[in-house]
Amino acid sequence: MPTSDIFLIIASVGIVILVATLVPVLHQLKRTAEKAETALEKINNELEPLLHKTTEVTEELHTLSVSLNEKIERTDRIFDTVQQAGDTLLSTASLIKETATPLIVQIGAISAGVGAFTNFFKKSEPSERRYFDE
Image (cartoon, rainbow, N blue to C red; front, side, top):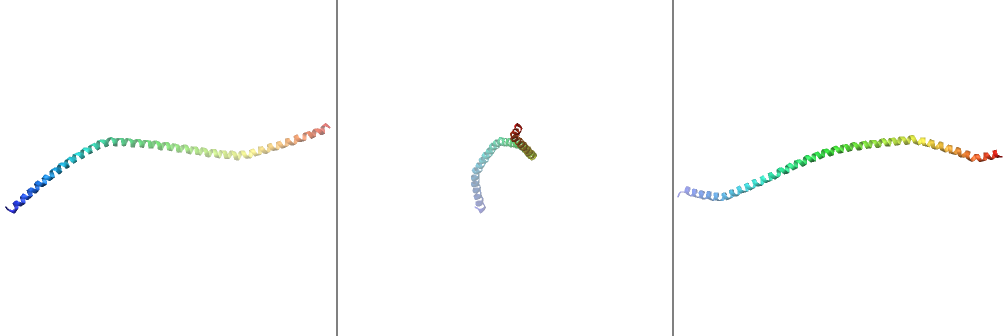
């Protein structure tokens, strides 16, 4: 038997062993690929509604955010208006105080002067009567 025949026999036996080993491995690999494909289909089917809901929630959050920003801007304007009204009231109160205080002091001084004047004459009336009665 020539060496080439022995080599062919050994190569043939090696190929048969290799094929016998690879067939179950390839069969298992095919089953694994099918299971992975089934799992991916399930995940895809479950992800689609989840992504749809997530999109809806995102849009709703965006709408709420815009609405909240508008309300915050209105509230800021209200606070600005209240602050301006408070400043105006403070200025008005200061102006009235500055204007009314001297006037009130003058009225008080006139009232005190009139009171002192009337008290002076009230005290002096009985003594004058004595002079006239006598």
